[in-house]
Structures are given as C-alpha cells and as structure tokens.
Length: 389
Image (cartoon, rainbow, N blue to C red):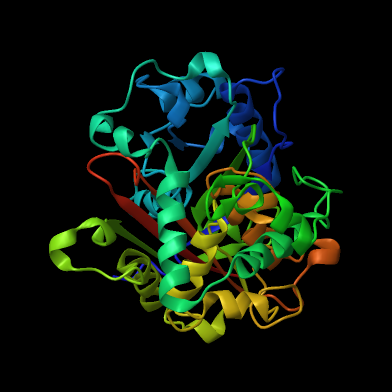
C-alpha cells in the first residue's frame, strides 16, 4: 500500500539563528521549536502523541534524549525515538513519523532539531577509527570534500567561480529572509574568490557557518490536517539510501558515482508518481558548495559534470528554471542539518515567503546528506522528500 499523500505537515517553526547564542541551550532551542510548531498547527499540547528528535552530534552518547524532551514539553507520547543519520535525519524523521501514523501507533508527531555549539558539550577523545584518517589530515568533513572538489574540477572542468555562484545565490536569497543568519550581509563573486582557504580548493565562503538554533515540524494524517489551522502540505514521496561507493576502491568508482543520492531521489519520485520536471522549488543540502553541485547532477536535474555550468547560468535563482535554497540554505540561512530546508519548502507551498516566494509553487523537493565521510569506515546517508500543497 502506497503511503503517498496519506500524511501532511501541519505545523512548522524555526527559532532565531545565530553564530553564537550562549543564552539558549540545545534543549532550549528544541523546546521552543516544538512549542511553536505545535501552535502553528493549531494543536493542543495533549494532542501530540509522538516525538522524534535528532541526536545533537556534539552532545556525545547521552541516552534518552527524546524522552527528556517529551517530559520537559509535558507531553505523554506513544512513540518516541532519538534518530541519527547525520544531515539526512530531518527527512528520515518525517518518513518514520508518517509510517508510525499509518501503522496506528500515534496521531500527531513532532520532528525536532536543536543545537547550541557549546564547546563544553564536545565529547572528549577521538571517534572510533580516527587513527586511520587523522595522519592524512582527515580531521573533519572539509578536507574530504576538498578532495571531491579537486577531482570534480579535474574530471569536468568545474571552476572555483562556479562554486562561488552557489554561495552568492544562497546569500542573495538569505538577504530576503529576515531570520537568516547572514541576513543583510550580501556577497559578490569577488568576495568569494578573496575569502581565505579552508582546505584548498574550498574557501571560507564554500563552507556553511556554525549555527545555534532549532526547528520542528508537525506530521499528522492527511485527514486530520484538513481540519487544522494551516493549509496542509502533503507528504507525497520520500527516499533514503546509505553506503559509500565513492570510497570502495575495489569498485573502481568515478567521482560522479554519487549513486546513494540517485537512489534516494529515485525512490522519492517513484513513490510520488512525479518527475524532475514537476518540481517548482528545491531545497538542496548545501553544507558545502560542491555538495550542492553534485546533488544537482545525481538527483537528475542536469547531466553529470554539468552542475557548475547549470549554477553559473543562473538556473537556480529565484525566477529561474529551478529556484533552489530560497531561504539561503545551510550556506547562508544557517546550518540546521537540513531542518531549515523542510520548513522553507512548507512555507513556499503555503505561499508565506514574501519577496522570495516562488510564484504558484505547488511541488517542492528537499534533500539531506549525512554520514561520517572523514572517519573509518566512511559512510554516506542520503534522503529526499517531495511535498505538495
């Protein structure tokens, strides 16, 4: 039985986003996001009977995260879980929520993210397997993505200026979003080219910022959503895929072999009964500019190797062929692990985005990307979500 359009997103909220907010904790951001999303849906607190929470990766191994959040919210839930597949988690939570509702386990599920970059909360010691990668400078995702970028440049002629156009476009959109971390701070292509190296060929403006903040969405049955406060946004398709084919040398992979994203998006489009041409607005995971470009290719919006030229031609800007990351994306709205992409997709379909509104937006795509690419064993986790009004 297909679950396409059987559930809807009925409430959303994003907290204030900033580089540092010492006055709010991770749990505080989570509580605010949940409370406001429930209010946005027009639900009473006691009607919420499910809670899915993204594990804050800087919190270390602290069990019962979702249970503690439920208790502090004052809700009694039938279905609770703390979920972690990195930046693919927000979409995975929505998928799990829809399946739980259709299984009769619960009726109204809140999916939540919160993060406060408090250095005291960073767990001491190195992650498992780090001894294999640390000697080669693989201390974070950035050096790994720098290698991906260099190979993409070598294979396809992708340029730093094309990467820069991703950053410039996201910043342009963020300057239309008062809640964006980089609101009121426009950049030019020359600003990108003059920004410092982080891990060559990635510059500072190729990388998303550290962000304190939170977000949440409420998932309900499609039937119930029709009776709530907001126009329903139906969950038409979803997909997940996991693995790291790029990093398995016995497969002799090419740099274009991001088949995990292809599998995730293909699954979502098949479930929704839609094609790429049906998408009016896309929110593509953009922790780094190169990640945005390979997603355009692997998700089927352009041919492999043509992502840089696609962006350079202005095709992802508002009013163009495929408006993307209309709130600013991770690069400029703020790094909320993809929760912001879902909230923006919902708001676009509700018609709530003011000057950044995509005209007659009916169908939206959001994607997620997680994993531990810089640790051993390296993994990718990709997710895709198709929503319709």
